[in-house]
Amino acid sequence: MLVVLGIILLAFVLFVTELFPVDVTALIILVLLMVFGHWTKVSPTEGLTGFSNEATITVLAMLILSESVRQTGAVQLLGHRVAGVVGDSQFRQVFATVGIAGSVSGFINDTPVVALLVPFASDLAHRGNTSPSKLMIPLSYAAMLGGTLTLIGTSTNLLASGLAQQLLGRSLGIFQFTPVGVVVLITGALYLVFVAPRLLPERVRPRETLLEEYEVEEYLAELVAPENSPLVGTPIADVPTEAGFGGEVKEVVREDTVLSPFSSKPVEPDDHFLITASRPDLTSLIEAEALNPLPTVGREPAVTEEMPDDGAESVLIEVVVPTDSALIGETIATSTTLRRYDATLVALQRGDVRLPRVREAEFAVGDLLLLQLPADELERVAETRDLIVARELPREDYRYDKIPVAIAILAAVVGLAALGFLEIQVAALAGVVAMVLSGTLSPTELYEGVDWTVIFLLAGVIPLGIAMENTGTAAFLGALVATSSRFLPTIAVLGVFYLTTVVLTNIISNNATVALMVPVAINAAREIGVNPLAFLLSVMFAASAAFMSPVGYQTNLFVYGPGGYRFTDFARVGVWLQIILAIVTPITIALYFGL
Image (cartoon, rainbow, N blue to C red; front, side, top):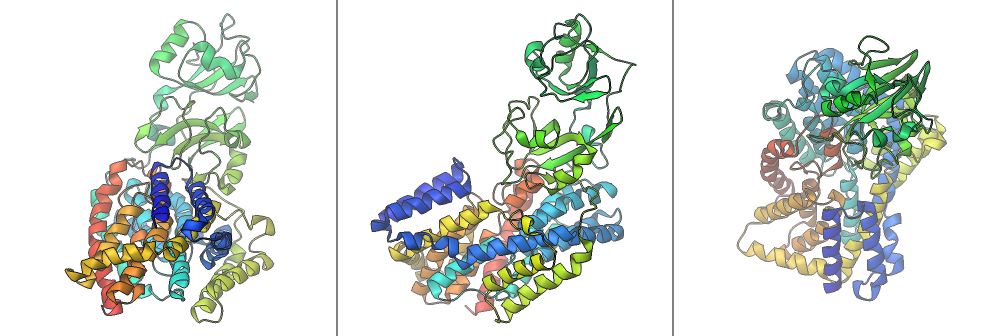
């Protein structure tokens, strides 16, 4: 037990400090459990069962099914039709955003739902002259709440079901806890529609151009290299270093050719530089005659969302860095992702912090980037998993004709599993095969929709539950908590588990929290002599209630940048929702199980 508790403590420290990515931390846990198998009671065979666990397989298949639906454009089509109805009413915009996110997330994994709806919500706000800040947090929170409607709404539910199969000999049904989920969703939705917009500040002003929104218009200038410039002959990539300014070279125009700022070609007289820099830097450049201003000649500095480059059209787009992006940890200089799309970083926003020197900054999850790139690269950027486009882009490659097929397959998966004709993992895998055979998803796209971080996280933490059970650690901790039932009613003990899980899930991964808490909760219920599923649901619902910080749940990070939020904005809105649900959820679960 001491060895297992030590591994749990190490896991907690690694998850909190994020010294390694969460999936790597999970693999470290897995290896330690097997290496110290004599004490953890986890054999290599048991250790690797996480990869074959029904939760892992089902999450894998459901992510692919979600990708299939995304490829059809069904969610975007629904959003566009709703946008035509809500108009410029902020109340109707919030109501529509919460309604779509909450309902769709019950049947499509909540994470890709938010990724799909961020551009929709942003455009909906700007078209209606509403601040996107009023919609983004409600979007993320509604998706989290919607994920509690069914077993397939979130990987957390599937992991809890897999642990129930291991510890109780039976898994959860698709709609087994839907009545509780409906109460939780309605309660949360009412709060998000009527209260949250009043608490959310307008961090992003409506109807701004992108350059105004990022406050870089005063730093954008077009300068020309004079014949006697000390920069002549210097490689373009070395200009910032040689000139000694902290700005950025965005592009260099030589006659009719646009050169990359990473180019090794030497600077020539009359090269036009589009740069962003502080006013003192611009002044020093001009006074040193390294670069001269062009007040009336050449292209004017652009302040609109389109920046034409002598016939080669360029556009500005917002993108968010997701959790599994190849950009994470890279800088502008080392990034192959930006070069792949011929993209230039115009501005970077990290929460409420705008970094003036972005060249040295390492990209992080949730960063909002303002990119300039050729218009013909838009489609490729919209398709990549390394970036989430934060503004709706015109797409012509959606398979609208496959929408009925995709919805029918998804409904069949849910129906067959709910009626007991097939196990959920079998039904989900059959759905994946049907998507490919029907042409809704191509074979090459099968793996693109999978968040492999989640898969390896699940595979790594599931054996931790086995170790806690085999060594008696879960029973020991459960018995400790169960002692509170001597002076507290059962519903209060249920609430204790809910609050403990909420605290943990706001600090570490929601899936890691479930892996730690479910075995303890089940054993505590056994000690008290009540239905273990009640305590399991308390943990499961609490793990999907990370409302206090942007790092508690990855969908919060997706909306962090587009909403222009500060770290404290999530707590400002989330604390009251957390309190309300901490009361409503345990009471609803207790009534549902007759405790």
